[in-house]
Amino acid sequence: MKLGIDLGRATCAAVLVAGSGRVAAQAVVDSAPGTAGSLRRALAALGPLPAPVDSVALVTDFARQPPPPPPRQPSWLRRVAVLRIAPASHPALAPLADWPTAARTAVGALSAVVTGGSAVTGRPLAPLDRTAVAAFAGRARQAGVSAFAVCAAGAPARPAPELDAAAVIADAVPGAAISLSHEIGSAGLRERENATALNAALGGWAADLAADSSRALRAAGLTSPVFFARDDGGLVSAEYFRRHPVIATAPATACAARGAAARTGLARAVVVDAGARSVRCLALGDGEPERSARPVPGPLGVLTHLGSPEIHEVRPGPPGAPEGTPAEAAEAARLIAGQLARMPDAEPLYTGGGAESVGAPPADPALRAARLTDAARFAATADCRVGFEQIVAAAGRSELDRLLTAARDHTLSRAVAAGAAPLTVRIESMAHAPVAYLPAGVHRVTVRAVGRPLVGGPV
Image (cartoon, rainbow, N blue to C red; front, side, top):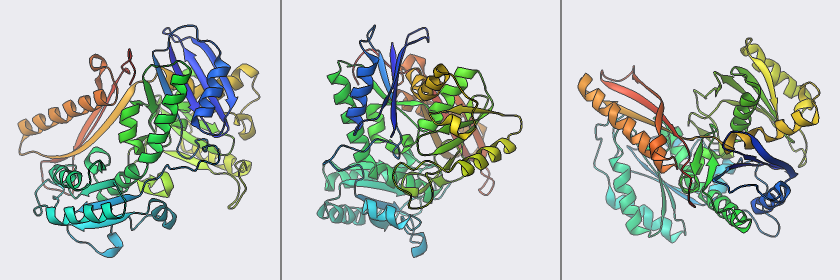
C-alpha cells in the first residue's frame, strides 16, 4: 500500500493506493492549523488501514501550506549569507539586486563578492580569495547567520571554487547549512544565485515541514519512508527535500494535473486547477507538464529558472482583499480561454474543489471527490525524479562522449540520493546542444533521471 496526502490551505486529501493501482481508501477533510493537525485529521478520516503502508508521499505548496497554530509563529525563513565568487560588477548587478524589497527584508541577507570563479567554458578567471571568504563567514557568524548560499561564476562548468569556499565556511562556522549553486540552478548566474539563496532561506520551512510530518505520521503508527513532491510532480526523499527545498515549493498543480490526466486518459490538455482561493492553469503535452523556458517568479516573487512547469495563476481577489477571498471568476475565465486559444487541439481538464465555479460541467459526487484527490492519488504512486544541468567543453567527439557519460552517471547517482531504488533508476531524458555564442566544443547538457521510491524501512 502507498499513501499520498495533499496538504492544502483549505482542504487536506489522503488517498491509499494498493499495489494494483486500485484506490483502497480516500478522505477529504478541512485543513487544521498546522501540518501535523491536518495530517492527524486526514488519517483519522481514512480510518484503520487495511494493510501496512510502504511509503508516504506529501504534496504541499509553500504558499498554500496551512499556517501553524497560534501562538506559534512561522520560523520558515532563515537569514542568509550570500557569497558570490566572481569578478566585481556594477552595483545594479550585485547579489539580490533584483529581489523585491519585501523578499530581501524577509531573509535579512548579508552578501559579499570575492575574487575567483570561472568563465562559462570552465576556464579559471582568478584564484579563490580564501581570506575574503573566511572574513565574510566570520562576519556572518557574528551576525548569528548560519545559512549560506555560495554561487560562483562558471560553476556549472567548474564547481571547484564553490566546493573550496564551502570548506572554508565550514571551518569558520561549524554546523553551517551551505547551499551550492552548481547543485541547484541553471547556467545563468543571476537566476542560479537567486535559486541558491532561496534554497538556503527555505531551510527552516523544509525542516519544520519534515519534522512535523514525521511526528504526526509516527504518532499514527506510520514508520514507512516519507517523500515530498517536487515542482514537476516527481518525488524526493525527506532528507533530500531538507537539503534542496527550492525544487519543491509549488508541486500541487503539477501533481493534480498529472493525476487528472491519469484519471481521464487525456495526454494533451489545458488543466485548470481551481482551488479555494486561486485558479491555476497548466498545459500538458504527451502527459508531461509544459516547462518554463524562461525565468519565472518563484517563492517570495524572486526570479528563478529551475525548469519548473509553466503555471499561469489568477490570485485571490483585488489587491488588499481579505483572507479567504476567491479568485475573480471573470479573470479566471479569461485566463482559461487564453490558454485554450494557445493550444487549440487541447481539451480543458478540471481538477480541484472549485472546478464548477470556473466553467466545468456539473459533476456527480464521485467526480467531485476525484477532482479533490487527483494530486494525492498521483503522488502516492509517483516516481522519484531529479534533473541536472551542466556546461561542458570538449576538444572532440571522444571527449564529449566521456563528459556526457559522466553527466549521465552523476544524474543517476543523484536520483539514488533523492530516494530512488538503485535497481530501478533510469535516464528519462538527455539532451545536449552547442552554446551558439561560445567557442566550438562548448555544450549545454540537460539530464533527467527517474526511479521507483525505495521502500522497506524508515527514511
